Length: 213
Length: 172
Image (cartoon, rainbow over the protein chains, first blue to last red):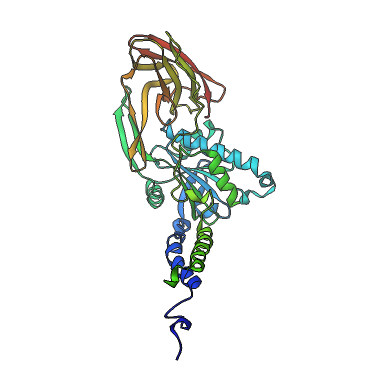
C-alpha cells in the first residue's frame, strides 16, 4: 500500500506546490496583452510632397512615430509637432550609425491630420516648412475624409468641433477638441507605446524609439 | 500543518521571487500602453517671481507659424501690485485676429480650446501663459513666423492699461 505522501496527486511536495500555486496567480496577472497591429489598414493617403502613399505599408521595415494634429491648432498640435521634431533630433544624436543606413532603414516621423477638409497636401507642406520639417524623415499625411476617418477610428483618435464662429470677413473659423496622442509603432506597424502627445517628454519617447532600433 | 514548515516558507519565498522577477516590467515597459504622461509638459523652467510693486509681463515667446495659419504666444504676467486686474484682450498686427485662449481637458482624453474674454489677474499673483494652457492666439497670420523673427502684441488690462510685448519666435 502506498502512502499518500508518495502520491503526487494527493500531496505535492511543498516546493512544487508553492510553484504551482504562485505560477497560476502571478503569471496570470502578468501575461502580455496581445499586440495591437495596424498593418492591415493599408489606407491610401497623400503626403505633404504630394506623393500618394499607403499607410502603413510604405513605412514598414523601421519604427514609426505618429503624431495626430490639425494645422489650425496653435497650441497642443504645435507642441505635438515640435515634440516629434525633437524626438527625431534626439534619436539621431544617440544613434550615430543611423546616418550610414539606407533611407528605408530610418525611422519614419509622421504627423497625420484629422482635419482633412482644411489640411490639404499644400497646407500640410506649408505647415511642415514652418517647423523646418519639410524634408525626410518627416511625413505629413492627409487624405480624403473617408480614409482619414478609417485611420482615426482604428487608432482611437477622436475629434469634435468645439468652437465654431464666423469672423469679420465672413469666413467660418472652427476648432476641434481632439485626442492628444503620439504613437510609437514597431517595424511591423504594431503598437509599442501610446503617449499623451503634448505632455510626454521627447526624451522618454526618443529612448523608447531607440530601443526599437 | 506540514505546509507551513520552514522549508515550505523558504520554498514559497524563493518561488515568489523567481516568478515575480520573471514578469517585472522594466522601467520603460512599466508605462506601457497606454503610456501615461507626466503631469506637466516639458516647458521652459518657471523662473519668474513676483516683482514687488510692479506689473510686469515677462519671458514672452511665440511659436513658428505659416502665413494664413495660426500661432500662439506664451509669457508670464507678474502682478506685484495690491490691486486686482483683468486681462481684457490682446491685439497684434501679425494676424487677422488676436485672442486670449485656453487649452483645457475636454474629458475622455480629449483636449479642447476656448476663448477667455476677460481673465482675472489677482493682486500679488503670477499668471503663466504656457503650452497646453493659457495662450495669446494669433489667427490667420498675415506673415510667416520663422525662428529668429520677433512679434509684437499688446495686452489690454483693465487697470494696467496697454502693455506691449515683444516675443522672439521659436519652435518650442
